[in-house]
Image (cartoon, rainbow, N blue to C red; front, top):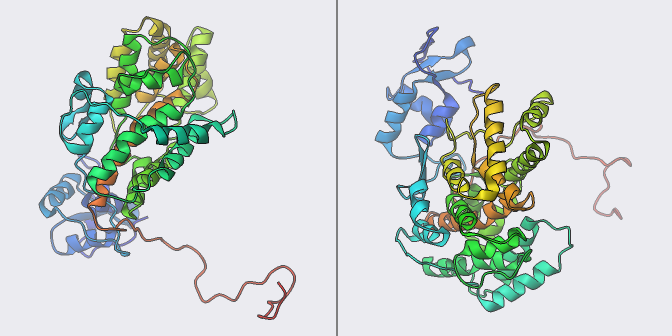
Length: 435
């Protein structure tokens, strides 16, 4: 909670035409410490008003944004670490998502997953780009994955495959851009190829989506369904500094090799509020299809105080633009008609109680439910796709100052000096103790 009050603070008016920022929000927008915000106030660069009750201050959002544009810099945190990151990869603005300045939803209408990945990595278009797994790396990853228990999830398998792939690459510590990209172009198809095949033979040629399809479902692939999967892979590559991407950048800041960067991202991705969120949407939609209506399913969630999965996104006011693209492609898949109708009913039913819109998890659920995929299929798609994004961020981070991501902790424990701790058996034992 903000408690510092500047000498230039004035009592806050009762009404404001627009919401004002707290000190912490202003600091985050400026990329500085809260103390620096008050330094700006004392220099006359910002104006502030006292918050209700005199606890902290508030700031005009437009004034703070203008200062951020003028300053173009960030003060270091107390421990010398950065809490804001320069990135030229993804911009999310005005309910749109852009990859290197190009509307992502337009990009995926013209380019496949591998081509979009190359664009994100290099800023250059490589039409027809295809990834291939080195034979030795793929064999090692498959052996490692096959040794796992049968109940292992897809993310378990992917984590093991990454570790095996790293062990086969003696040059993995070469962090030059060319070496990192060579590793990435081999790692991503290795992750797919290490997963067990569920249906007929895996695709030996063509886009990565065709090979991944046979690892997600036993149903036969068709062109419209593959188009949905390829677009989903391309759209999920990056989404600014999501939790897993932040973990990947922290690893890259410590100069971890690209395989370790991907492992860091996978470790965070498995949480139910991130990559695994699509599984929750799958189960909701599966139940809605089985019951013939989404109304009682949504009602059950609302009655028990549970969030309705697949709806809402903190970065978009309306429908997730990535979901919009996938819904349009899913409309061309005959098998998806029932699940697509159920998804629309989920949105319409929930809208009676809360202004929430569909996100990409719900669109992934339509694909997975309609084509006989497991609940964790969306998480698998997410993980494979986002690997390319983590590599893109690693390439950026390798160009920054090493170990710059070092926020300082806010200690809340007992103040020193404290007495030496004692165990439950009596007074402390000296150096001669047998324990």
